[in-house]
Length: 407
Image (tube, rainbow, N blue to C red; front, side, top):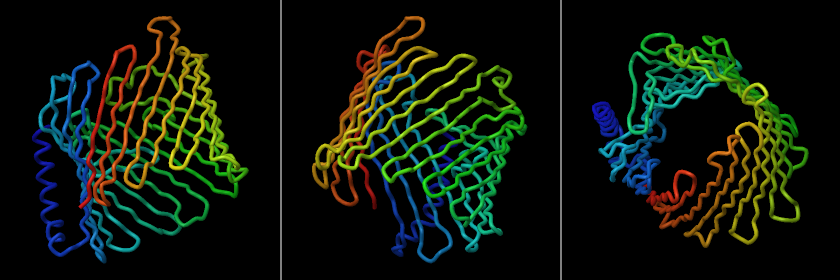
């Protein structure tokens, strides 16, 4: 993995030197943003740890040219005695790609990139082609080596590839409609093959939508959503939605032979903004089905309040009963803008749970305090500290200080 990171770093430096450094000399539109962070606290085993991390995003988009370059990555060093994370100097490249537009109707993206189609999504080292206005439709095609991350490492192989194609309507007013196909290979074997569709229509005060994905190898619909948003008044939104998921696995995985249960959820929700008061209230109910006769009812009631100028407070209460036990809890959080440079924020979460076996019943709490200082238009500082109290920890403190900057 360290060798892979060195190669990734060399490729990043090459692209930066070849394209970006000449741009800086000629005052081309080069933008670099970063976040320098210090994080500390206890890990899940209760061991103390701290991390120094640097996030960096570079974009180069010369005016009048048909190409641009974008990259984003992270390097970090861990300290402490934790056995969960690696304390070596590590790095991760999230994306680094070259966009090129050979014509007004076509574009190419080459490099590490995230591809999201209704039939599946993946992080790739590969190529994406976008063709626009091919009659009434647009076409997206992607192919590449799939990248997978663990907590500290990256896994990839030329024998594990992804390719997909998506066809969707373009320039059709009030209608979104598309269909896609994705195939994945693992060790050169066909491991997953899926088709997907997505739809949304906007008509006056309502908007129906749907999305579904079907696994050809498993012969199962592994995910589907159907719903409608209704706006009977300008300050009222109603939602009704059905969602289901069915776990499917790579055909090369041992888990593909295990029996699994289908999950279903029926949801209704309403958001209403009061005319006379700066208050928005919302409520939802969800009927959740995990297996035969294993159902759960989940209720949420909340409000977003503006009691005074520059102060926003969000509060909600939830209650869950049925399969797996009962739970009730609340959450209150808010932020106050002192002036154009300072914002403070705080929150509390509380949950009380009762399990069917009456063992390990109890409660869990989280308290946090944070804020932001805008030093100038190019520099800001964020800070947050929190404490967690639950059946696993008497106290689990976590903290973060981040200096965000742009050059």
